[in-house]
Length: 88
Ligand SMILES: [Zn+2]
Image 1 (cartoon, protein in one colour):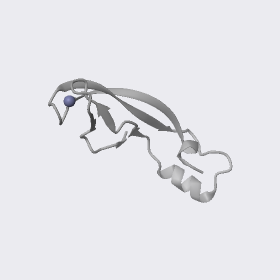
Image 2: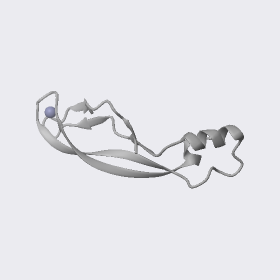
Image 3: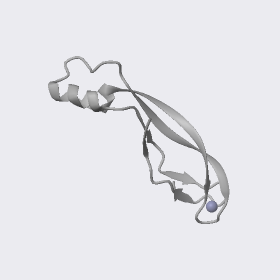
Image 4: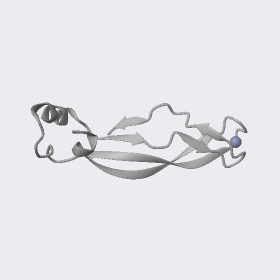
């Protein structure tokens, strides 16, 4: 049983401003996130262990994008914020 059985998944885009480490251009980018919202009940046929895992699960968002392409120099750079999972 995996995460997808516990959560409803929805993709969202969040706008954030980043500076390119190559050319220092600041620009706003859309960063894609996956919002995982816990289902109202554990899936049918869930084992004891899965039920326990489900009980402990919380809603969270996981970042889809790791890399952006600079609008100035067109080089790729890593999203500087190292946090790629956020509990909500
Ligand atoms: Zn750049």
